[in-house]
Image 1 (cartoon, rainbow, N blue to C red):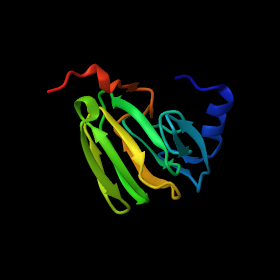
Image 2: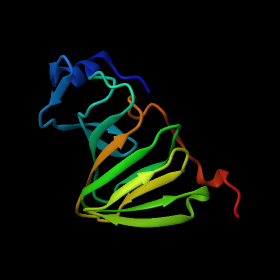
Image 3: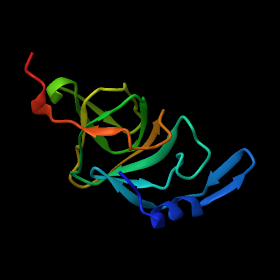
Length: 149
């Protein structure tokens, strides 16, 4: 997934500092991927990160982050507001519900799909990845591709 030069410029123009500490102050929500909106966070695209990225994701009311797999990186979430359901595992047959205040860890290679359980309120979560490239190492997942147990 390549980004335009204009988008890359937007990612770097909000970064302050240097010489070991870089800062983004109260960035706006404007980037999108797979049904999710993101604040401009930190990644290899705009700071000197080599092993992690971090931002804040918003899933709109009734929204879904469609089935996908994180290839070779871990992900941690902290739910700031809202309620989500993760369908996960082979065929997305397992589910777990989470809400504001919950921490979530997703292992590399685990297929999952995320649903906002509210039709009126957004979900907001801090997202930290052990991958400095953000979502380039995420692949779509077809739940019909896994045979039933």
